[in-house]
Length: 299
Image (cartoon, rainbow, N blue to C red; front, side):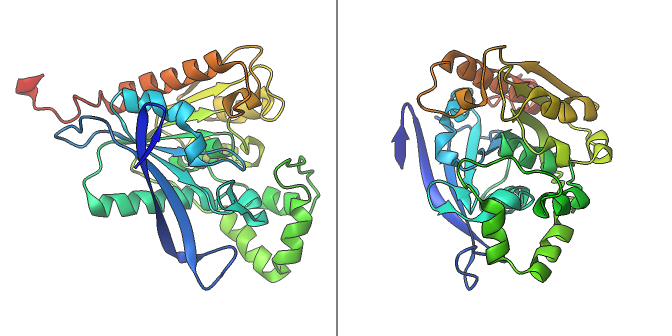
């Protein structure tokens, strides 16, 4: 058990035998979990929120979003996405094969469901994680655009956490194997267990097909920063305009992408406000944690 601020979480690592470790193909893909439980634990399963971190981040760094959810009574699980988290280090596939992220989440839900009954499930993601949770709702990547990015026909913005990531990928992954991954990128990764999605400054919007966004039926809330140059509004709008039931708002005209993750950021009020909005959103769409599945006679 780890104590972080007022919230307590435990950490463990799952292994997905269907996919390989990016450093050692003889081993299964690792997925590290950070699990927060509401205290006291309710008699019936509390709604579960699963959280996906941003590029090069970690589930352990998402407590700014997790804290208000746990305080509201939700059960919360944040993930480390293999090859893209600062705990274990970086691999080029972790930055470029984003479609593996929603698979991490679905695998985690499968594992948790084997241990105990799941309550209603929601998903929240920041930046790269914003795409991942949208994919669980039905967003699908355009494989042709992915191929163009990897071929540098479509420019890839420089990634500060991994300069030269495309060159590193070409050095590591053979062309025939890369074609397999590109074909895999366009798969439908919808997970019917996800009932609501909360995106914060989501990435990858321009790579997602408009038809897949139009098919999303569950509630989606989208928050962005008015001064964000990493996930600017015209990219956020791919999701906002494309998802029929999506609602959204700016966190403020001065809010940058960094304000959501940088420990040195001074604009923590906006970040805290967004986290409280997430708790309100999930309470509205998943039910109050203390009231889920409560018999009518006890309401």
